[in-house]
Image 1 (cartoon, rainbow, N blue to C red):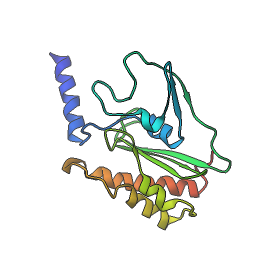
Image 2: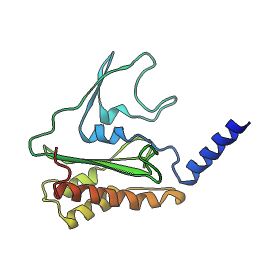
Image 3: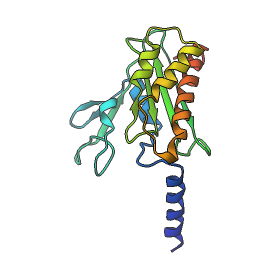
Image 4: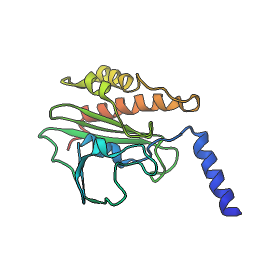
Length: 181
Protein backbone atom coordinates (compact mmCIF):
# COMPACT_ATOMS: atom_id res chain seq x y z
CA UNK A 1 0.00 0.00 0.00
CA UNK A 2 1.17 3.60 -0.56
CA UNK A 3 1.10 4.38 3.19
CA UNK A 4 3.22 1.33 4.02
CA UNK A 5 5.70 2.22 1.27
CA UNK A 6 5.96 5.77 2.59
CA UNK A 7 6.61 4.49 6.12
CA UNK A 8 9.33 2.13 4.87
CA UNK A 9 10.96 4.93 2.87
CA UNK A 10 11.07 7.15 5.96
CA UNK A 11 12.43 4.31 8.11
CA UNK A 12 15.22 3.70 5.60
CA UNK A 13 16.05 7.43 5.58
CA UNK A 14 16.42 7.37 9.33
CA UNK A 15 18.48 4.18 9.42
CA UNK A 16 20.73 5.48 6.66
CA UNK A 17 21.60 8.55 8.72
CA UNK A 18 22.83 6.26 11.51
CA UNK A 19 20.34 6.93 14.28
CA UNK A 20 19.94 3.42 15.65
CA UNK A 21 18.00 3.47 18.92
CA UNK A 22 18.79 7.03 19.89
CA UNK A 23 16.72 9.16 22.22
CA UNK A 24 15.35 11.85 19.86
CA UNK A 25 14.09 14.38 22.40
CA UNK A 26 15.21 17.99 22.31
CA UNK A 27 13.55 18.66 25.67
CA UNK A 28 15.19 15.83 27.65
CA UNK A 29 18.77 17.20 27.58
CA UNK A 30 17.51 20.66 28.59
CA UNK A 31 15.57 19.21 31.53
CA UNK A 32 18.66 17.30 32.64
CA UNK A 33 20.93 20.35 32.26
CA UNK A 34 18.51 22.34 34.44
CA UNK A 35 18.28 19.49 37.00
CA UNK A 36 14.50 19.36 36.61
CA UNK A 37 12.21 17.09 38.61
CA UNK A 38 9.26 15.26 37.08
CA UNK A 39 6.31 14.84 39.42
CA UNK A 40 3.83 12.04 38.76
CA UNK A 41 0.71 10.82 40.46
CA UNK A 42 3.02 8.50 42.47
CA UNK A 43 6.44 10.11 42.96
CA UNK A 44 9.05 12.71 42.04
CA UNK A 45 11.84 11.67 39.67
CA UNK A 46 14.96 13.57 38.70
CA UNK A 47 15.10 14.23 34.97
CA UNK A 48 18.40 12.40 34.77
CA UNK A 49 16.77 9.21 36.09
CA UNK A 50 13.47 9.70 34.25
CA UNK A 51 14.59 8.71 30.75
CA UNK A 52 15.40 5.01 30.47
CA UNK A 53 15.59 2.26 27.91
CA UNK A 54 12.84 -0.27 28.46
CA UNK A 55 10.21 -2.10 26.51
CA UNK A 56 7.77 -0.58 25.89
CA UNK A 57 8.72 3.03 26.33
CA UNK A 58 11.67 5.25 27.05
CA UNK A 59 10.91 6.49 30.57
CA UNK A 60 10.72 4.91 34.00
CA UNK A 61 6.97 5.54 34.21
CA UNK A 62 4.85 2.61 35.25
CA UNK A 63 1.72 1.73 33.26
CA UNK A 64 -0.62 3.50 35.70
CA UNK A 65 1.60 6.54 36.26
CA UNK A 66 1.20 9.94 34.62
CA UNK A 67 3.19 13.15 34.74
CA UNK A 68 1.44 15.83 36.75
CA UNK A 69 4.13 18.51 36.84
CA UNK A 70 7.63 19.34 35.66
CA UNK A 71 9.60 21.38 38.17
CA UNK A 72 12.55 23.38 36.91
CA UNK A 73 14.49 25.06 39.71
CA UNK A 74 15.37 28.73 39.39
CA UNK A 75 18.86 29.01 37.94
CA UNK A 76 21.54 30.16 40.35
CA UNK A 77 22.36 33.88 40.33
CA UNK A 78 24.80 34.66 37.53
CA UNK A 79 24.26 31.36 35.75
CA UNK A 80 23.95 30.96 31.99
CA UNK A 81 22.49 28.29 29.75
CA UNK A 82 22.15 27.45 26.09
CA UNK A 83 20.57 24.78 23.88
CA UNK A 84 21.89 24.00 20.41
CA UNK A 85 20.59 21.58 17.84
CA UNK A 86 22.00 20.23 14.59
CA UNK A 87 19.39 18.92 12.14
CA UNK A 88 19.39 18.54 8.38
CA UNK A 89 16.00 20.06 7.79
CA UNK A 90 13.78 22.56 9.61
CA UNK A 91 13.50 23.07 13.37
CA UNK A 92 10.74 20.45 13.61
CA UNK A 93 13.07 17.70 12.35
CA UNK A 94 14.69 15.27 14.76
CA UNK A 95 18.13 16.39 15.86
CA UNK A 96 21.15 14.58 14.55
CA UNK A 97 22.78 15.85 17.75
CA UNK A 98 21.68 18.40 20.36
CA UNK A 99 23.39 19.91 23.37
CA UNK A 100 22.11 21.63 26.51
CA UNK A 101 24.51 23.45 28.83
CA UNK A 102 23.98 25.11 32.21
CA UNK A 103 26.89 26.93 33.83
CA UNK A 104 26.65 28.31 37.32
CA UNK A 105 25.90 26.83 40.68
CA UNK A 106 27.79 23.91 42.18
CA UNK A 107 28.82 22.23 38.93
CA UNK A 108 28.46 22.74 35.17
CA UNK A 109 25.87 20.50 33.49
CA UNK A 110 26.29 19.39 29.88
CA UNK A 111 23.88 16.96 28.28
CA UNK A 112 23.81 15.63 24.72
CA UNK A 113 20.77 14.28 22.93
CA UNK A 114 20.25 12.07 19.88
CA UNK A 115 23.57 10.31 20.44
CA UNK A 116 22.57 7.40 22.69
CA UNK A 117 19.48 5.45 23.77
CA UNK A 118 19.12 7.90 26.68
CA UNK A 119 20.14 11.55 26.99
CA UNK A 120 23.91 11.53 27.58
CA UNK A 121 25.29 13.53 30.48
CA UNK A 122 28.83 14.54 29.48
CA UNK A 123 30.51 14.32 32.90
CA UNK A 124 34.04 14.48 31.48
CA UNK A 125 33.19 17.65 29.57
CA UNK A 126 31.72 19.12 32.76
CA UNK A 127 34.94 18.31 34.63
CA UNK A 128 37.00 19.95 31.86
CA UNK A 129 35.33 23.33 32.43
CA UNK A 130 34.45 23.19 36.14
CA UNK A 131 35.69 26.31 37.90
CA UNK A 132 37.33 27.72 34.77
CA UNK A 133 36.71 30.83 32.72
CA UNK A 134 35.52 29.49 29.38
CA UNK A 135 37.77 30.31 26.45
CA UNK A 136 38.50 28.68 23.09
CA UNK A 137 40.95 26.18 24.63
CA UNK A 138 38.69 25.03 27.47
CA UNK A 139 35.67 24.86 25.15
CA UNK A 140 37.60 22.68 22.71
CA UNK A 141 38.89 20.48 25.53
CA UNK A 142 35.34 20.03 26.81
CA UNK A 143 34.13 19.09 23.32
CA UNK A 144 36.82 16.43 23.07
CA UNK A 145 36.04 15.18 26.57
CA UNK A 146 32.33 14.92 25.77
CA UNK A 147 32.97 12.20 23.19
CA UNK A 148 36.09 10.53 24.55
CA UNK A 149 34.11 7.41 25.52
CA UNK A 150 31.92 7.42 22.39
CA UNK A 151 31.62 4.16 20.49
CA UNK A 152 29.65 5.19 17.41
CA UNK A 153 28.50 2.81 14.70
CA UNK A 154 30.48 3.07 11.49
CA UNK A 155 27.59 4.88 9.81
CA UNK A 156 27.23 7.39 12.66
CA UNK A 157 30.84 8.35 13.38
CA UNK A 158 30.10 11.84 12.06
CA UNK A 159 27.88 12.42 15.13
CA UNK A 160 30.94 12.48 17.40
CA UNK A 161 32.39 15.40 15.46
CA UNK A 162 29.05 17.22 15.53
CA UNK A 163 28.77 16.63 19.30
CA UNK A 164 32.30 17.97 19.91
CA UNK A 165 31.51 21.05 17.87
CA UNK A 166 28.14 21.68 19.55
CA UNK A 167 29.65 21.44 23.05
CA UNK A 168 32.40 23.86 22.05
CA UNK A 169 29.99 26.31 20.39
CA UNK A 170 27.53 26.14 23.28
CA UNK A 171 30.25 26.92 25.82
CA UNK A 172 31.67 29.74 23.70
CA UNK A 173 28.23 31.25 23.22
CA UNK A 174 27.82 31.38 26.99
CA UNK A 175 31.28 32.90 27.47
CA UNK A 176 30.33 35.55 24.89
CA UNK A 177 27.16 36.40 26.82
CA UNK A 178 24.64 34.79 24.46
CA UNK A 179 23.34 32.28 27.00
CA UNK A 180 22.60 34.47 30.03
CA UNK A 181 19.62 33.29 32.08
